[in-house]
Length: 542
Image (cartoon, rainbow, N blue to C red):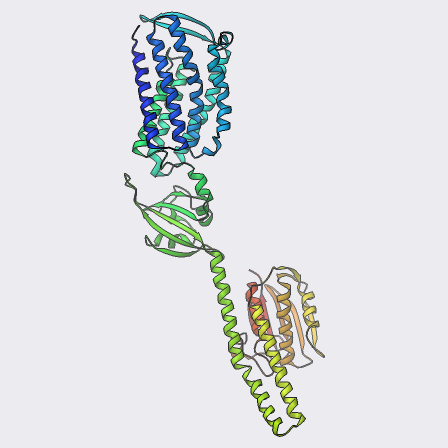
């Protein structure tokens, strides 16, 4: 037996690999830890048998220990790659079936050295040589060995690339852990290139380098809780979270964020950027929110979020950071607004019922009492008129209540066609409709028709039977005007409110028009027409 120094290095490497496997087994029971334990077991066997080969002095023993090395040496790179992908959060791609398929060729190649008829494809020739007073085994490798080396490099490079990419993308809280693992992963690649490609050494240092990798991972396991708090599946998990998650330092610099936060806050929410420099409207309010409090932010005209801000304290880190959790409450706000609109309609309904119905009811009651004493037909006519008036008010109130619901699906409608339909639905004996429009607007056809019917009816009630009503285009929408007496300037601000009416009106018709405009998001202004009548201007342009 001989004692070359490198043999003791390999024995120490085997010891390190075995120790790393034990630490990993005790520290974690995840799939990543199991792959690492298996990898370190192969590295320990590889290093140990390589050391025994160097210690042996006869060709038979050297060939025996050399034969044992091929299986762990061929399979270890595949397990290294599998571990790297699992650590980087891509464990779902490392299925048992894929892993079995990946190791099939290396296993067959590693076992073929024990079959005399196949050994020549792995080792074409072996011979004893003397180097510096030590006996060594020189091996001329065959095509299967070279194919296995190329095959292994594909997996090693993929694994190293995945670990390096994870290190670059890792948040600052994981940066030391990821950097340590990256350093350990690069060492085996460098040792392998030096041994097989650059041929700078006669000894294969790959198992020693893999043992060093095992040590770095073991340190990360103990010091940084690798495989426990590492960003395993981090990207996949955060991508599935619908709430925005944002982490900044004390200066407002973005340390990390998920896709939902980036979508909410825009392009300014990039890792490394200072959030306070962003142009997005909610950012200043977000930054100014006190820690451990919740606020509501308006992202734009249509979206609202709640922001919960928490101060982060990390053990072993001097970083002062803040966590923001953004939850989209747009649907809730819209529901609240809809409830408010309905409550307003109910209040309006109650107001009109208590006020406007009281007058015709009093009239009907009074004439009913008179009819009891004097059954004059005129008394019954007055009662019938009062009931008809009550019916009109109730019908308009029901329409107002329904109109208070959200506008339905909109479509492109021809304004002139809807105006003609609305005109046909209103009793306008001697009145005239003038259409000066060829505009197509996006609207709920039924609601638009309701609004026009009420405007036409309002014109007839206040402008007389021979009133002329004009529907015309405007620069930013359309107008409905008449040549009646018009609406006094002091009354225009209130005329769209329920219960406000002139003689003969129900006090609800123009409120319906206002509700339709509001439901579409249109502005509605009451003005004076060119003929001195009323002019209702709908501004539909956004």
